[in-house]
Each structure stands twice: as structure tokens, then as C-alpha cells.
Image 1 (cartoon, rainbow, N blue to C red):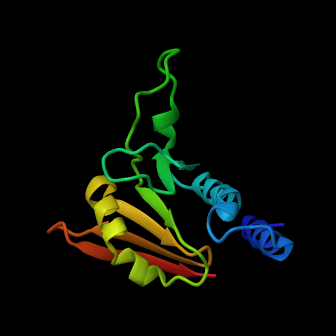
Image 2: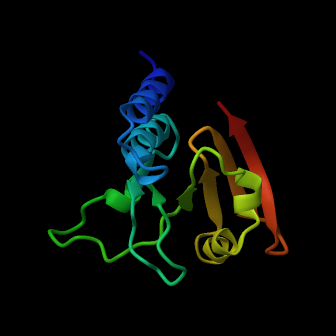
Length: 142
């Protein structure tokens, strides 16, 4: 089974259980998908769900490069900013473009420079252009 098939199966299983809530119940499936895809990138990218507040609120996740996990000492790294931006997850009925234009994502953009907005089905990567204005960089729909 491919990563995408596993992701869709997990979403379906959670939904059909009737026990899930619209966002957080689906975090593990999304994290797994993002990590599977991230492992194929150069540099590799890893998702951590529920990262610390770094001055812009608490995003649903952060996208870190592999070097941010490199051990240089026995001490953990001081809280880092995710190099590849943060993740904002909404329920499946939300419009990712409207969410991306909202105040919360705009605040994240100023701090993290890129935000992956998703409703678990639609994915929109938002970044900043040369004038530090929000711009939709890429979109993908399942």
C-alpha cells in the first residue's frame, strides 16, 4: 500500500469510527503522510505535531529539516524554528484558501515564512514574496 493509500485508509477508518473530532483525531495520519513524503525530499523534512509557541501562537505542526535533528551534544537543541514552515490543519469542510487569508495564518507567515494549510484533502502552501506579501506557492487536492 502506498503512503497516500495508507493516509486515505486511516482518514476513512477514523471517520467511520464515529469517535473522531474534526482536526486532532486526524493528526497522526497527517503526520505519518508528511513524514513519508518528507523522507523523499532533499533535504529530508520531518513533521512534528503541536510545536512550541515561538511568538505567533501554536501551529498544528512544524516542518523541520533533518539537520535540525542532528545531535551535536547530549543536550537537546534549544527550541528551533521549523526551517520549512508550519502546518495549519482544519476540518474537511473548511476552504483552505479562506483559511490561508485569515489572521491566524497571516500571523504564522510573519514568523515561519511558509505555512502548509490543509483540510486533510486540500493542501495549500503559502509563502511570502519579495515584498513580504503572502503568495500561494503550491496547491494540491486529493
